[in-house]
Length: 295
Image (cartoon, rainbow, N blue to C red; front, side, top):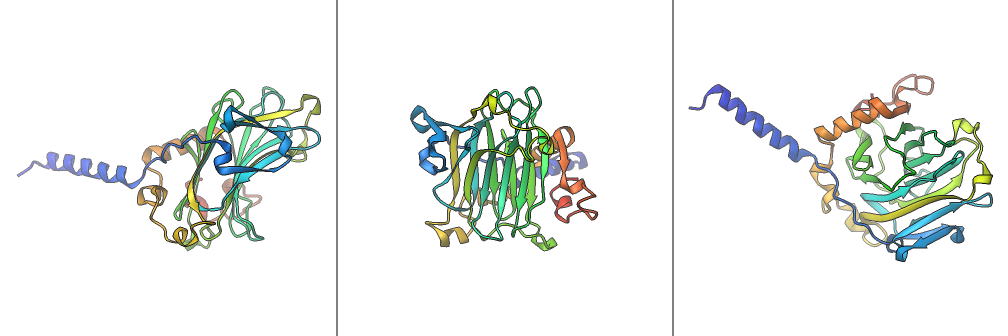
């Protein structure tokens, strides 16, 4: 008969193995050319192509910005691209990477990179719209200078959760809280968009810092246009039946312990605004905040 201490040891090993199989990190994105998944949407001449379309640049001047969108709409998946932000004095500019549906009660998942004056840090704002309702902003400083090199920005979206990643570090989770009366995006396909535009009426210090057009053109660089999602335009019935793709599996229904610790690291060291703790806007905390571990 095994000793009590040995039995406890086996129990802890078993528990650890169960815990590690309950969650997993997303698969590493595949770098693909821009044209494989995306098309320009406006100001085509403000998009520059390099290296056979594997690299592009978006340019903003005083006349116009520019942007692009995915060729297809997707219902769930893992979406990623590498971006090098506008360097130098980028005040007033916004570089956006987001998913959005196409109706009045739209769903949307946002990365917005808010430019700043030279030597002041970029601010990364995230937001989630469900059923046309947003106002779920969170803002963080990044732990690196996003203008010096390319960094990966990713969204994992399935029936259970939406996770925002920066270089594989989860910076935000939005769980499916339908049981709490919070809508969750699960039945409206979304396209993926990115754009570089002027927003000096609000982007930098609430609009106090204006775009210095003497510094134009402003340039953001992109590569690694990865999409691993269910193409709703081609496979609508398949997309409605979940559990067929890696990002639909049980291990991607939550973060694991190390991932939550990294999320807490971001929360504690780099978060500068969280709607969950804004009592002026929300005297009563929104119901999803505890589940998302935002407080």
